[in-house]
Amino acid sequence: MCGIVGLFIKDPKLEPELGRMAAGMLATMSDRGPDSAGFAVYGEGQRDHSKLTLRGKSAASIKETAARIGRDFGTAKVTLHDTHAVVGIDDKSLPRLLDWLKRESPATELVGSGKRMALFKEVGRPANVAERFGLETMSGTHAIGHTRMATESAVTTDGAHPYSTGSDQCLVHNGSLSNHNNLRRVLEREGLRFETENDTEVAAGYLTWRMREGLSLGDALKVSLDDLDGFYTFVVGTENGFGVLRDGIACKPAIMAETDQYVAFGSEYRVLAGLPGIEKARIWEPEPATVYFWER
Amino acid sequence: MPEVDLGTTPLRELNAALHRLGPDTNESHWTVDHPAGRHAIAAGLAVPITVEINGPVGYYCAGMNKLATVLIHGSAGVGVAENMMSGFVHVAGDASQSAGATGRGGLLRIDGNASSRCGISMKGIDIVVKGSVGHMSAFMAQAGNLVVFGDAGDALGDSIYEAQLFVRGKVKGLGADCIEKEMRDEHKQALHEVLERAGFDGEIDPGEFKRYGSARKLYNFKVDNAGAY
Image (cartoon, rainbow over all chains, first blue to last red; front, side):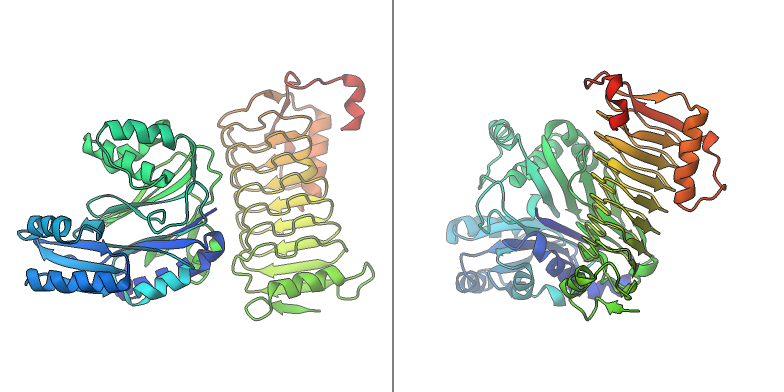
């Protein structure tokens, strides 16, 4: 089943509320996906700086890694969130940090990178996952999130969404792809690497590959309609907003709301019911096989 | 008359109370506040009462409805009035996909738009949509009337049996074995009666609609059995 949420703030006054609103939306989607949850938050970026999200095997191990990064990289700014750490680093030191991670802490995974995106995911009830990472207190311009009911692969942190598709970009998915095994083989021949048997990771890899070949995200989503077989509603987070695509049959639910202050996406109306001013919002379902973007 | 606030009363309590009502109940008019998109509100009603819901509802609202009148002052999620047997369900806003799916009788009126697969596998229900309907509406529709004031999406009436489809606006595309048919006086009269029951007394001209139905090539239709539909 799975649940997806997305929130894009139009009114800067609401930015400090982003995490609190997104956490409520995510918790509502527990019924659609109790196995694991994840979310990406687009917070403040800094000029000439990058933001990496790292995941350790445990909260203790990432704490230790974070301390060592602090020692070896004086300019790095590290914030701990349970099993994850978000590292802000100047672009000049970035290659050295990536190299250091591979060498000094190979068990630490790089789950997302970019200028503004921080990406968190873990196994567990969505409300608990959000609480562990402190989503409620995060501010930013937009966020996307996912609650998973596993169908195509095991319940693991690696099987949780979102999946990173590039710098400041990630994908969440409700549905199941039926040609992911074949597509994975095709993409592996193109040099992509996959960590799991998960179908969404293949969709993320597919978009990464198409964009590497020169397509824009919007065009990559459009051609995916021909190449991906199965049922899906995708929400893609980008540096400046998010995109939505449903397959041509559009079995997987999707509902959107827009007010002067925000654009919100949910798998069901219940996700939107608690948002401010929802009574007066424009509410609609995205059309099948149509790419939508909200950006600022 | 009972008033139930779903912000404070569990949904199961409301539905259990509605299911306990006998056919002669004096509690014949219920008001439900703060539905907040919850699923299966007022599903499985079997007595002639009226339930008014103030706000948007989730999946399968008024599903399997028999005899009851359910008025939704808001929008409805997936499968509103699915498998309705009789009675009247009125959605003041929009309806999500599969509205009135497999309905066997009664009347579903939607004042806004209905999403994809409206009236899928309908088996005798009448559905009147003031707005437009999405793709694959009336898929495998067997009996009953689907009336659309606006437009219809792609693949209307795919693999249709003997349901009647009336669309006033544009049809993006017809599904397999669905064709436009002549709108004769008897059809105008039948449509007029459906509109009247839906509360549009004489304000809509049946002559503005086009009629669509089965070409009867996909299934073995024998004219001797026509009366069975």
